[in-house]
Image (cartoon, rainbow, N blue to C red; front, side, top):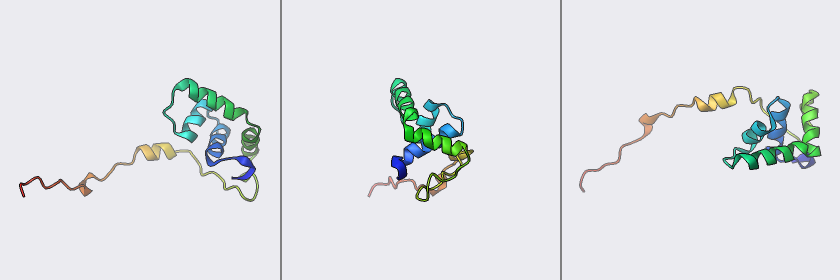
Length: 101
């Protein structure tokens, strides 16, 4: 990843630039179930990294690309809601044959 940003750091920076608090941005980017104090500490630490701060500022300034090698992040608006609304088609499941052989 360019400038030392991982995909998760990029997602974190994008979420921060979109206005999410650091803790929510961390939870979105890292999809973690860890304890809250650890998440808060990591969110704070990441938000203070110069490369993350620079990326947030670049996004806020309307720059879609940090440089030629970095892909723009897809819009996050509605993504979680869409994911939560996915309903599996249970008719595709087959019941096991429990009859004696």
